[in-house]
View 1 (cartoon, one colour):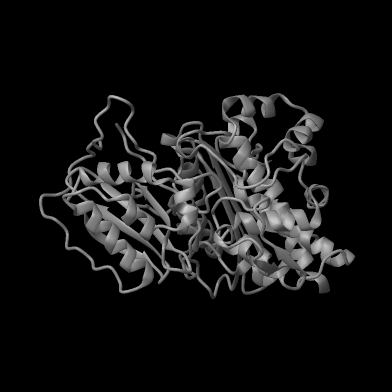
View 2 (spheres, rainbow, N blue to C red):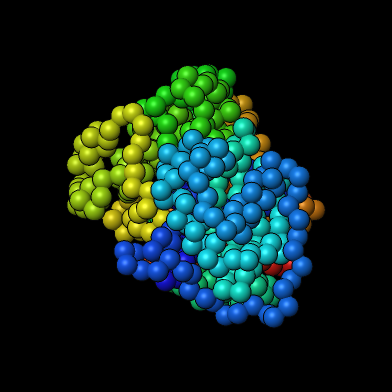
Length: 476
């Protein structure tokens, strides 16, 4: 069988954070357990060169030490024990990926040993390590929580080498060749706040069509928060409390915090955008009210606000997608707005239970289980947030949106870059709002959506496209 790692829903891929300290932003395991009666052996990919590359050493950091342990386990003669896993992994990780799911993955990867780490990047808390063996190459994303326990472990195929686009035509061709529904928009922002597409834009196989946006919906949540602060309904210092009824699944870190933990509205907003914290997002949705987020969707110029009404929380989306099986997804797909609102009222309280195995393999967006927008909608949302950032009550937005730029660009050409990405199983997207050294703004949006996880576009590919777009724009 083909062992391809796919993350849990709503994951925010680590590649987005290459220019800032990398943090725990996805809880995932590779979804490659053998089917009944099938040998648990990875399917070989083309053989590596005969000469084994030199191994790189893991750093003496919390993430590096845990990565060393994982590598040692993949080389061990005996299987990893449950006690070892419980000691090494965070409680939140094991709640979503129980030991009985995790250990067979280790056994399968152990069958392809020896693994040689040949490249790495990251920070004290998170690493991406490229591994090679005689059978295949893998990229291992690992991150740790505040206690040094593994909160992220994600195996995937390394992306292919990138050949930078040398023209806008070439960039469009690169996007159109991706094996998924795609929409690319590169737009200048006019003096009156309109998105003005560059020549040939929007482009892609589904140019400017509504596609799933995953965590990019958090742009609208942030807009609703700013509006609530402006009305006096909230203050940036208002405390919010984590409870089991609002606790979501990763990405993020608040899901690991005990009940009763408090963060301010501003702290929650910073976590929501910089590391795509789902629990922080749901705290904010509850604080402002679902209807106020829906109102912000309209006021931030979404072309069809009713498409996001009712707007599920991240917790509700996990339940709809992977907590109730195909029947629940079918009910959601068939329901009108009122029916969907009634269905959300059925969402269970307390600790969230989902089908972990299906979260790695089941694509749910064709059933309408996601949030949907066009590239033009996302461009308008970024512009709306930039406008809010210029108001007295929206001052924190500038820092919040730029804490994680998601790309490496020339800082002299683009001194300010705001970013929000988002994904689910089979989908990956990114949206950027940048200002050049003259203060002129450019927006880059790339959305991809596949109906089969095997066709999902890697986050690195989106990063390369965005970086090419910013480079070409600077050259114009």
